[in-house]
Each structure stands twice: as structure tokens, then as C-alpha cells.
Amino acid sequence: MKYTQGMLRQDALKGKTILITGGGTGLGRSMAEYFLELEANLVISSRRLDVLKETAKQLQEKYGGKVLPLACDVREIDQVEKMFQLAIAEFGAVDAVVNNAAGNFISPTERLSANAFHTVIDIVLKGTVNMTMTAGKHWIGIKQPGVFLNIVTTYAWTGSAYVVPSASAKAGVLAMTRSLAVEWAKYNIRSNAIAPGPFPTEGAWSRLLPADLANKFDPAKKIPLKRVGEHQELANLAAYLISDFSAYVNGEVITIDGGEWLKGAGEFNHLEQVPDELWDQLANMRKKKS
Ligand code: COA
Image (cartoon, rainbow, N blue to C red; front, side, top):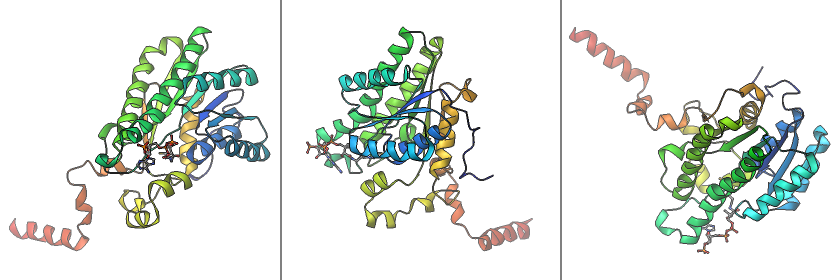
């Protein structure tokens, strides 16, 4: 067994319909792929219908099953409601929503225009609110159980310089996840989140870290496990949190980052720079003194 392999039994998501925003590319696509392999029906959405259609075609060819691609800008409540209705018309129900669509600009905050700041807040926070309110009201109205899985980030609780709109929005998503986990538990609606560390994707990585920067700041170097994440690892965790195997997990945010964020937190973590010889010298000095 290896962490690059699928973890759950073949029929773990059989009969469930899962809607994934930002499901045409990157991590959204990787999660979608594994959900389909586990026999779920899928709705994938983003603003680019051509990309979604191509993804849907490729995934269906590989695994069979049904993937419905729907164009939707999550910032627009009308589009979100319409998408949700189309998904129900196709599959009869939506059982789980993965709020994965995101936008981010790496920049000194004072260089951002007001509109740039609002754009990220609108996609990440308002988009998640739109999706959550639409699905939640529907599920409550017809007394159907549901599952939310929100993709946040480890800086949702620490904050982070140079990605302030994203940090602010993700913090809001995390607060909403925990709040609704309690408030909507009585309707049998669970809300959980995943906080991924670095998982390379073509889109976000090339856009967020242009070539030069990416070479300078190799993310693997600052991770205690000295590697970046494999998409399958994230897909395994996401599938578990969507599945009934996690029926008692509610209001949790699970970090999957190789220990990255904690490394920045522990006061003495930088001592990993100390070579073995120096530890030996220090030990010898102690022994001589005693
Ligand atoms: N840095 C700073 N500001 C930026 C920017 C960047 N890299 N790119 C765009 N902006 C600003 C624009 O100048 C504009 O502000 P202005 O009107 O004051 O000039 C504002 O942000 C909106 O830009 P626009 O391109 O009109 O937004 P959009 O709604 O069409 O698209 C995104 C926004 C985020 C979807 C788009 O930029 C995108 O696809 N980004 C990459 C996706 C991404 O970030 N993925 C990572 C996921 S973590």
C-alpha cells in the first residue's frame, strides 16, 4: 500500500451525487476523478464550459459513470441557483457540495486595487456562501441530509502576508464551516473543511509563482516531510469526508500539509539547522561540566 493509491472501497460513494466547484482543473479535478472512480455521479462547475466539457469527457472515458459539466460563476447567486436546479433535474438530488473554487493574487497588499481585493473575497467567501445557502436551504426544505466540504488553507487561522484577501476570505469560510456544523447538524447536514498545504497544480502554481519565484521558493524545502503533496492523498481525504464513513466527523478542519504550518509556529523549530557535530559538541561540554 502507498499513499499514491486510492484508499476507499470501490463503492464508497455509489449512488451519491457530488457537486464540485472549480472541478474542471487542478485539485478540484483530482478530487472529482477519485469520486467518480468510487462510483459517484458528478457535477463539475467553473466559468469555462469548454474546459469542463473536456474534463467530463476524459473522466467518463476513463471510469464510465456520469459527469455533468455546468458553467457557473459562483459569485452570482442566480447562476448558482440555476446550476443547482440543473443538477437536480439531471440526477434527482445533490448529496454533497465541495466548495473548491478559489482565486488568489500574491502581492503586497498596498499594491492591490479595491477591485482586486473584492474579486478574491467574492470568489472565495461570497462564492462559498452562495453555494452553501443554495444547497443548505434546499436540503432543509425537503428534509434531505447533506454534506459540505470546504477547501480552505492553513493560513485561514494564522493569516498570511502577501495573500491578505485570500487569507481573509478563507478565514470566513472556516468560521462558516464550524458555525453551520453546529447549526445545521439538526438537519443532518455535516460541514467539514480540508486545509491543504502545497499540492502542485499547473494553474495555481504557474500563475501564483512564476518560474523564477518558484525556483527561489521551492515549497518542498520548507516542509518537514521534505516533499509536496500528491493529489491522490488529498482525494483520499476528501472522499472519506464526503462518504458515510465520516458520518460522525462534523465541524472539523483537517490539515494535510506535511507539517508545514506548524514548522513556522514552534519557537525552536529552526534548530533543525544545527548539524549533528554541534549537538555532539554541546553534549560534550555538558558532560565536562558535570
Ligand atoms: N495581481 C493583482 N491584481 C490583479 C491580478 C494580479 N495577479 N490579476 C487581476 N488583478 C486585478 C485586476 O487588475 C482587477 O482590478 P482593477 O479593476 O482595479 O484593475 C481585479 O483584480 C479583477 O481582475 P479581473 O481579471 O477582471 O477578474 P476576473 O473576475 O476576470 O478574474 C480571477 C479573477 C481570480 C478568477 C482570475 O484572475 C484568475 O483566473 N486567476 C487565477 C485563478 C487563481 O487565482 N487560482 C488560484 C486558486 S488558489
